[in-house]
View 1 (cartoon, rainbow, N blue to C red):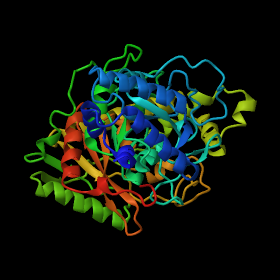
View 2 (cartoon, rainbow, N blue to C red):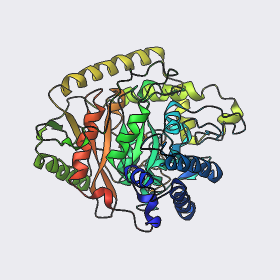
View 3 (cartoon, helix red, strand yellow):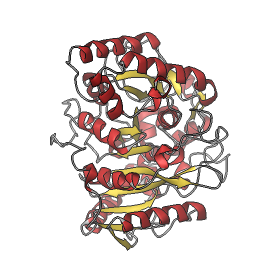
Length: 469
């Protein structure tokens, strides 16, 4: 059993800890060994601190032995994306422009909640520079690869977290999502990722990319993400934009199924060209939900591609984050990011006001569209994973255009709705495909419930990439 500890769910580990059959120290050592075996090829980790990890594990072991465990995440290994602050560890955001020698004395709210719950931190996962794009490579850490095919990208910007989960480094990971950065890599790696409603998981410091940026759990199954949400959604006064704490138990209705629900299904959103293999797998997934008792209504939401709105807001965020860098640091940026920064200089105040007006109209439209539906389902991505090290599949030399191939994810950052990607199959080449479940605003628990129903009726989450188990 010891050899499989790194593949076990948080729930199973907690049960074993409670019975005294397994120690958090054993689990931590097994996870660290998996990282040591595979990360030279995968490059999902940018920081591993074995001493700190084992110290946390020993503290958890003592609590379990005294019957004083802090909860179901006590002693469970977790991975933190290199965008979120971790006390004592440098958060470099994948960039050579960040000084690693400064004092690192704060946890981000989500990290603090996991630490308070007794989670054991395995280290920090790779991200593209400042999380700016939908793949994971950076001037600082190089190229991160997909465990299902090392020549392919795991997606991004939470690609390190997703790749680490898929490769069995541990059961829990943190991600951020400003345009799909949790759901894109979850879709490409056959893992689960939830972008909660904006403000449900407190953030600090607030993202320079503004109110499109969410923080959420990434796991190998839905229940573990729900357990994480029970902690992550707790309040933190540092985020003045966070939602009031509602004491929701995100695990309470996971097993209630979808019978009687009405779910909208939009295969293309009305404007996306989808790979035929992807389209077929998503269609089959929708049929699974129909067989479970959901009423499926095939309908498009009725909006056009909001890419121009997203680009204005995202590019302006890049300017806010990086525009004040001195010339010597600007020269350190990834060329494509530097190009985005250059493009952002032409964005005017009027452009911003117009983009926010259009965003408001889109948000209002989606609130009204969702009223008769418990969820909207689309593909997570229109394509399977493409070559690692490229910004996008069609034109590897294109600059600043990653939103071209992520048309299903960023619209729902603009609307701030909860959305998740759950594995729904594999292409003939063995690459994972994700089912995208978008909920009504604030109905994160319902999104998790629908994903749990689909996951429970299929076996995709049980398949592991060759060579990692």
